[in-house]
Image 1 (cartoon, rainbow, N blue to C red):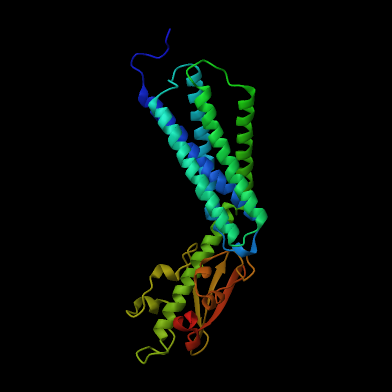
Image 2 (image 1 turned 30 degrees about the vertical axis):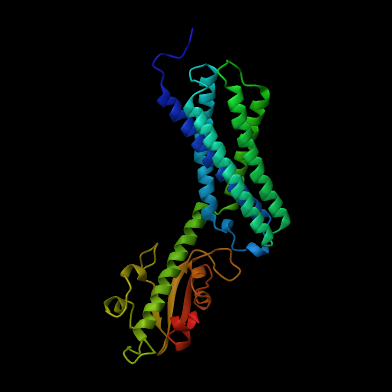
Length: 324
């Protein structure tokens, strides 16, 4: 007796296949980049100090994609395979065939793009060992996907079959590799508390840089129209129509207390703040100073804890002079 009903639910099949192949692409591409980020972390290359994987945010994005997409793919795929084996789903449908072949096209295009990118990196002088490992990662993942799709087409041909031991070993091997890559990914990124501390320090430095620029505009040593004196307090910056700064820029992002400002001379002053982490030339912590001109960035290097910056409105430290 045919177990497929007269009014067959093609929409359900389309949903299952589409979700399965979409999550397959998401988690496989993310796993590809995650594994390369892990390789880059343990096999650094001096010529790629500013590499794409240098930012934890990028790695976190790949981790999140794998953690979310892989379980969904695993569940939907196992459910679909079970239903195909029990003939509750049709094996030979246009939806399934189209999605399989579209997936293959996308995977092949990704392979071509990845290999081109890898060869470009190699020709630009990256480590040969990293080039070979990156290439191997891309090819292994691509071969697994292509082999799985080929197996899927051949195995589920409308006849009742049980999954063999070899395929189960393949499945558990893939799961083990995914779990290992996720665990290693968590080991190489900062904890949420450390990332929060870095972001707070970044906000502090951005605010201090804004205050410094506003004080310079208030003093304006290069033009006769300037006050040629430092403001008595930071509130004067808010009330002055020539200075563009918001009150929120004067406040610590965590405590909401105003940054300490002290006039120390006719053209010198101090800005003080309390930082969560150290930031120096050798520090691994990256903040907004990396986006500032080099001379301006060095003004805001700081240790962890309470620290005061000795600043000046001298012409040599003008925003224009720093850029030159």
